Length: 316
Length: 300
Image (tube, rainbow over all chains, first blue to last red; front, side, top):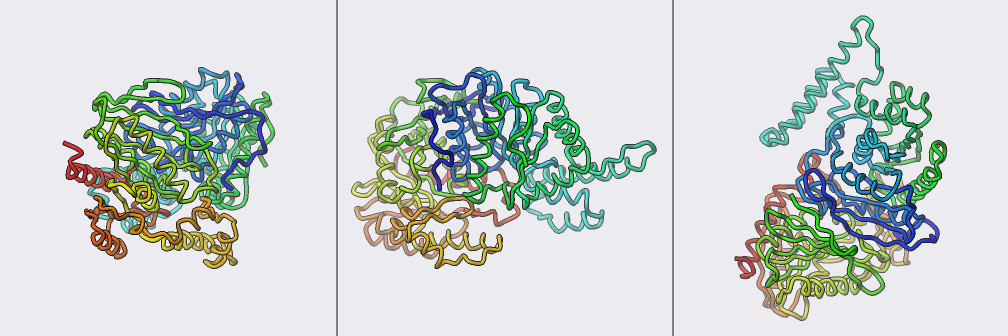
């Protein structure tokens, strides 16, 4: 169950540890290198935020890295500043500020070896991938595992959803119920409440805007504007993006609703954004069989993209 | 900020300019496999003492990871070399997790300890283990008077695996599976099949080799110093284990932190909002380890 999910590969793989200089200190990283690397395409893995090491749950990061390397692709995975073996101190893992500096530093190192780079990002790591891809032309594709389409920091999902969906009284009731004196005493607790309040006020302001004469009525105002801009930029460059979700993922529920707005328009227009949907929950990678399926799909997706084809494959 | 210093391809190191400590990452050979190892070396060229840290498994591995890194950095700053590693079949190391049993865990730890002593030049060695890895640390240190530190140690293998299987049953209830029971899971394991617990493979070899083990039997004699750090509360079975250790001539120090840890699932809403490494808890653990090594005379 824990071994390779892909059949025997032609290339022997060597893993090599690396330290990469990031904006907030040295980042711990790991190369998975084939004997005769593909000089054109490399892959960078971007982890989810929080308690994550780059080998990932049940080593799915390790396994996919070696599976891809055995197909001839150099692969690099790393730990954000303040996590794992990296230097620095972690902050809130905010989706609208997803450690893009760290990701850029790592992608830049890969750029020294190959012509084009495919990114595989998980949750917060997928949002980092979009940030990086928007201004690094060497990125030629993104496989995004359960990316949140809303902004916010870890653990703020419920509050952010309520800011748009609940009544003012309901929202305030929730906030007061959730308030703990201890939390408000800490700097991080106060920062969190400030962020939630900002989201709430933004949501209310967007409601007001909808009633202004000539205003565009966006049915999904809660979708990250930053994410939409990034996807637009990637669409113009014909960079393929695959969104991989499980039907039980809370983020898929958001994604499905978001298709009714600007995100849906982007998917229809450019045909560069695809969806891969499977039963159950993908976000937490909480089934070994699911991890194996995902690894297989990632390898197929990279193989397709490395052939220079810009569409098709992977999505359902 | 640390700066990168690229050494040979298979071995890289960096130096923290604020402390002068060196972090050296490498793969070391153990049998046919390669074990990922990170040495935290004090600024002086040779350390007198070295600690080998054995990490916990499954969901507990990433949960404790950063805490181990921060403790290792602090101890290196204080003059104790620390070596951390990933067992074969775990994390970045090669190897088949299905073959991971107590004998292989001990073999990994002892091989790493030999490399740690050679790398740091240390003349005395201690082991550390968190949760189930307390068994590894205790067993690897047996036969010598090496100090052992333990965080939230598992006292009986059977109890630990009951908790793990209970987690699997909770997952089954959540997912609407009706054919999962403690009996069926044990049957799977004893008939040679792995059990998937929240995306982690629990293999029969680990289960059968550790199920009937107890920590106090692995700890001693001979007489040695042990440190037990409990997170948030002192468990009764840990108290009894310490009593038995004292009866066997061991010297035990117990510390209880103010914060607890939820090892498998985030059971408190607040878990999401604290920094990744649980700074308060980690700070307490760092200070406790620091004080213990000072008591041993290993740090100034």
